[in-house]
Image 1 (cartoon, rainbow, N blue to C red):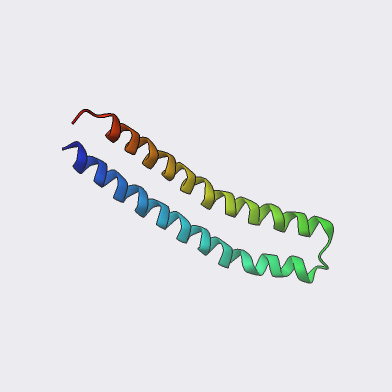
Image 2: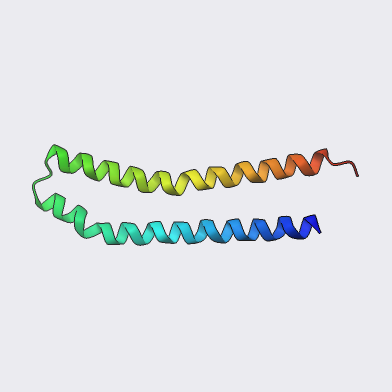
Length: 85
């Protein structure tokens, strides 16, 4: 029963990560006009800083969940290896 639960949690986490990535891609598409507006405003230092911070936040919100998923998978493998057969 625990292997069924582990498989369900694995599928659930993978689907959540895929949905999260698609949500971030949608955010990039919607942020496009704002970034273009900052470019048209002359590319001041503040506009460039805001663009870097926005893109960095988007990148982190995609990368961090992927690292967390890898940690959970590693922990699950270690638990499976530690179980007596």
